[in-house]
Image 1 (cartoon, rainbow, N blue to C red):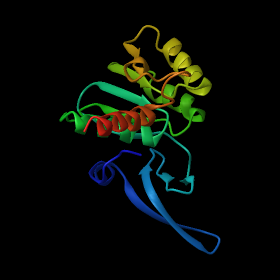
Image 2 (cartoon, one colour):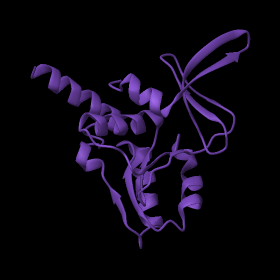
Image 3 (cartoon, rainbow, N blue to C red):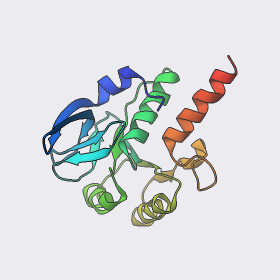
Image 4 (cartoon, rainbow, N blue to C red):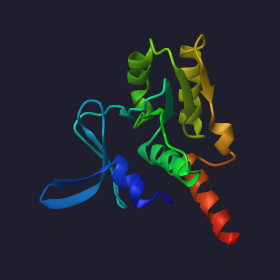
Length: 170
């Protein structure tokens, strides 16, 4: 998916779990309820409660993603550009967690950048956030990455297409 091992080591954990009598593992990110969002080549799964996940930054800015892979793709793009992240990176882990995000950040004073998917659910969630925070500093940054129904579906698609183009130019 274009994400380096170092980005995974810095931001995720390897989670081992059992379903029935079969053992599995994948990369996971802890959510704020203590559960884990897990991905491997076979499945997207959760252990524990479904909730948002945050990687805290030092600046009064938050970047909101729909899924863990997009958040990791953002971290990868920063690394490729020799930039360090100082923003809070937040993944909804599903648009069903949108209200949890709105409740948690309702009094947030900093800047909010939205980088959700370019599909119907992502568009609806983006509109809901923009309307909820209409008097605050909130920006939809998907156009920077050509994320739309006719472009890249999400930030990971952007990253993968960027890598393909760079590999063709070598």
